[in-house]
Image 1 (cartoon, rainbow, N blue to C red):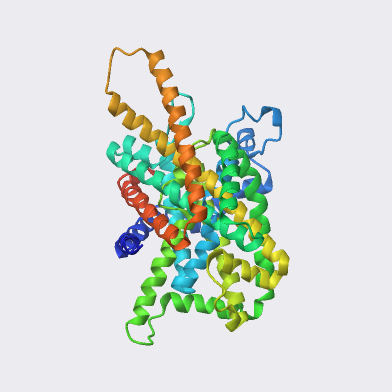
Image 2: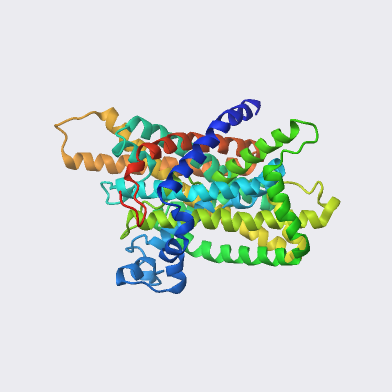
Length: 486
């Protein structure tokens, strides 16, 4: 554990924060402040078009419509709305609840401010990586899309080894952040709220996940499409109800957020500076964990969308970062800070993570609040697990294609039919092995310590972020924002 903590300090040191911030600033400036100054435009092109249930063309209406005809579901393509729900499933998870609670405990109220900064700049970064993913994606031999940073590293930068390194890191991240962290949070909720023992909980989670992920990308998209809008709406409503009950302390909480974020006043000289850096580090690290901007995962999750453009998918990625951090994370943090302030000494020793968040909702909404929190935690985390499976599967398939091609060499005498049969057999075998490994990591996550899992997840995030952010810098000339010429 000591070694992992040391690596965490190294990989999430000042240089990492500078790289994230500078990349976000570069694309923010290059876009002309698009995330802020063109807010109405990208809002209307994404969630606004769905809320209004209107569109300028029949094509746009077809792209955002949720299809109800069950007998045609197996043939339908993955729509823009389904890919957005899948991406939200990956981003809106335990990072919005457990991650926020952990950040506030470790870095103080000021950590929320740095999560806002991370989101603002991350919106531009998310646009860049998602649009690049759409630009360089290609179809596999079975007709499905393969997309993500590993593809634009290979096809855009002509750096296949960098793509292999990224894909390997992403596979590890899918087993850590994608499955173990989420499974741990589900089990913690099941045990705290319903008294379910870890062994039983691990088995239940694995079975439910297996039923979805063995159905492939389309089943993952359909499940995400049904889960996310409903549970997100319920969670936001309950958060607002809690905050309304805490209105007298709300101004003080807002003031505390900004004071802690910039406080250099000392009690003990350099201690204030240490707390400042800690606030920044935890706020940025948890902000990245929550909205994933800069990791490249959004580029993968939007890759299977049909009938779309790089610009449209880039704007959807911006909306996802905005909704994830500026809306959901903020409401979670304000709920925790307000309830803690009102509770005073009775809030001491409550716990951390999901336990703290559940205690806050239960204190204001009673048993209904605790049940809502438990259900939200389980659904959010479950949706993240199945979405991150798809993320990992894409990278595993890339590694299989790339390393398999290297191993086999370039034989001119093989017949195409033989190669196709071998390709299909390899893909099926590799996919099944990854599914088993992924479900195994879900079981392990439900039984491991929370602090160890978080540390491992942060390490995997950093290993994904470094090659992706460097690639974004080198390919920035290929990123075109709406209204801007290349």
